[in-house]
Image 1: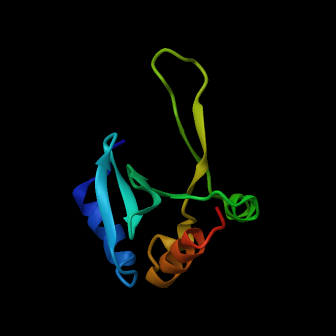
Image 2: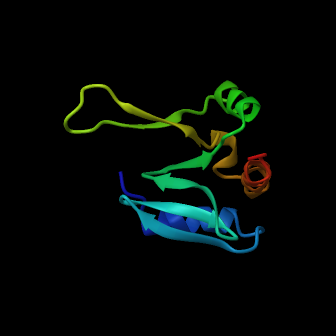
Length: 110
């Protein structure tokens, strides 16, 4: 489930209109930050944004986005990370949409 170097670079390129986007390795994936604030994570070929606003979560769900899940070796049921939502497919090859979604996520109320 690790994010390849090429995939990380591709996502950074999509997000390049935003200043100060950085990545750091995290559990085989990559953590995405903007000005030190967590934007999301990359695992495999999927981008998950940290979506904490309930209305925005409903919008992501209506777009077909999924919450990040994983299965622990010692458990049968998957663990669901409720605030990590996959970026909708339409943004995966569209810099304007990826940036719009990122800015929307970064502007959420805390």
